[in-house]
Amino acid sequence: MTRFFNEESSVETVNERMGDEVNPRLKALMTSLVAHLRAFAKDVNLTQDEWDFAIDFLTKTGQISSVERQEVILLSDVLGLSMLVDAMNNRRPVGATENTVLGPFHVEGAPIRKMGDTISIDGKGESCEYVGRVCDLQGNPVAGARIDVWSDNADGYYDVQQPQVQPKWNNRGIFVTEADGKYNFLGIKPVSYPIPNDGPVGKMLAALGRHPYRPAHMHYLVTAPAFQKLITHTFVGDDRYITSDAVFGVKDTLVAPFERVNNGKTVWRSPFDFILVPDEDE
Ligand code: BEZ
Ligand code: FE
Image (cartoon, rainbow, N blue to C red; front, side):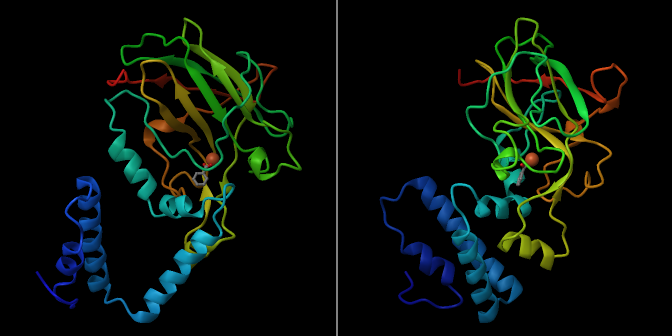
């Protein structure tokens, strides 16, 4: 047992202070965190000025956060931590649709729409027909799957970012599959947009010579009884930011075809199947 703090034995000194009745998982998490924080400070030879700057940065990150603005998640996103935690917790068999970040713009309670309906209420942008199936790993259709979809508008903003400008539920909707597992709806071909960059995280990206853009994508939250929840996007492959997503959300398997069509209905067509994995806990 070390009595007083010193540089050499800082990890032991701090971790020994923990009580005996501490939740074992909390103990494991905090013991490791203390060790890694020390390793970081030692590795970079952290100066007092640098640590003061970091405290100020973290303080501002908390202060700008609110119900509408989650700067702490944004920090985790741009550091690649959100995608790492997601990857570690959603390892799926080959063939299953992969997860990616949820992002801050999902809204509960979007209208349930009929297959074939449009989610684009403001009528702006290049129209696109989205089609495909929800199925299991064997290719069997999944009935009763709820496909909750949302995207930005043609100006690169979600409806919730422009409540005075865009109609409510613009580019959002929920579609429920029938026995054939098929879905189709109309929307727009999404456009790339910057993540909120007027706060400390935006400043950090600028200081690191990083742009704040996400490549164009459609968001999906697909749920079905007895299947694992799927949180994912489909991406527009020829987007200029496809290999430099500010939040590292792109995966090869999520780049979807966007085919130019001449069907008298839409300018684009994007086919994509969602392959779900059974939920072991059910
Ligand atoms: C989004 O795609 O909506 C998003 C994801 C992470 C951070 C910011 C926005
Ligand atoms: Fe998005």
